Length: 79
Image 1: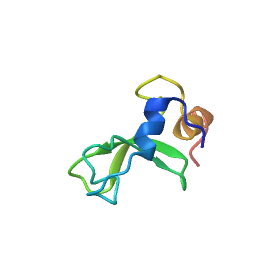
Image 2: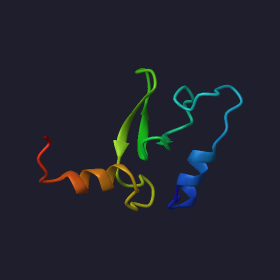
Image 3: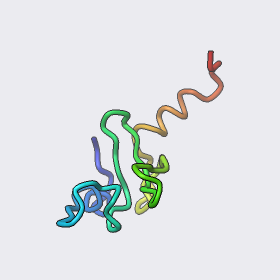
């Protein structure tokens, strides 16, 4: 996984003494799913949910993963 900027790195490496789960920590804004290669903004109050993003919210760099999948599926038959 390539991290685009220091603000993104700080978010992903942020530890919390009160919350083991990043989805429960109010200071954690971004998550990355290594399993699916998807980046997301954490949604509070909905359990373990995140809104997928294709660009870094801080530096605007295109993120690998979801953006790649979306671009490669445009115009393809969903069969």
